[in-house]
Image 1: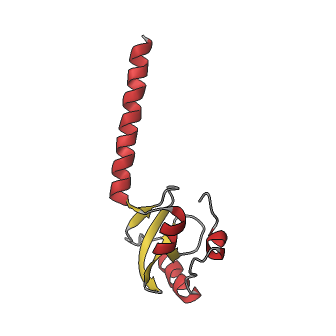
Image 2: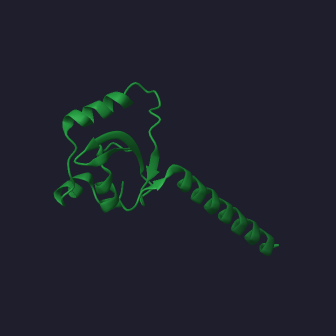
Image 3: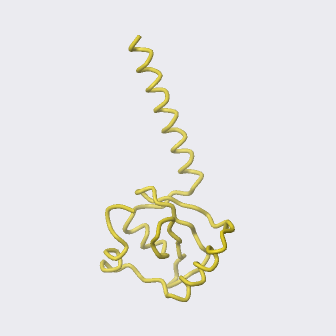
Length: 111
């Protein structure tokens, strides 16, 4: 993740998820089986999974990196809005198509 570290987010007021909830989330992910949790992406393209656990009135999100789970509101406050996996994939597909078209046009104009 970029821009701001998790420690800096906590220092700036992010709510820490209790160790008991974090432990349950880690246990659910340690066996290697897919969790089926919905995936979202922040503006740094970090993957966050919506765990279904709740704390302090909010959903607990599991990061794809080595960070520990955080509340959805804090993820969005510090790393921008979360985009659902389908919308993110559509965006990336469109971006890749645009890049391919630009490349093809550059090759054609170079001839």
